[in-house]
Image (cartoon, rainbow, N blue to C red):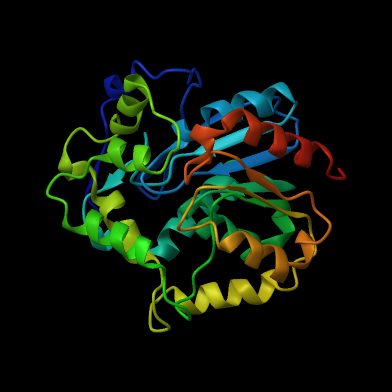
Length: 299
């Protein structure tokens, strides 16, 4: 596998992101992650989505660490400081699930994890929780879902997929801004562009929309349907925290609350004036919600 590695100097001026990167070698692919909070605190595994990276969770991490929660935020392979496989065929749904599993369990040895998944972070995190339930204490689903290909995706998602696939130049910061209600400062936009010096580094952001199952013939459909079989019996705490202005993922919140037994009786949250990237629009509030949820779990 041929991989590209973003030069370190690209990350020299990140606002509000003082966390030192750590790295793990996963069969020749280097995966990056950052941590905050006490090493012996309850663990929150913060999984980002498309086309962001752990930088997205900077405000959430600060709140969690202050509340005594160990926040671990990986960069998905192809994003952030992680290596970037240069061929689209190197990116599969199953491979991304395995990379996160290997980092979280084989390298870091995490247990009693609360996974916080947004966008692709949920598509990966829900799979991990269903496939390795003994490792997880709880789930926070934040603007995410778990498509199986049984139902069509909304037209706004198809519009996004077509835009990503057809763009001559993929403007990463512009896509993040489009998913926010608030206006991102120039240095924050630069932070989202930092991992991608040129178009050759953007294979993963271009590939990810095409990995979402849109038919039962999709190679990920069977695994996601098996995950739903587990989720329909999942009785561990399951919290939804969705923005009120996410036209793609917003409709998933009531579905998760209805179908997952562990969601019953939870203090589900809808964050006002928060778009798809609710970590940008309401990071402080999301951090408080997750911190309260995690600290309230039995240990």
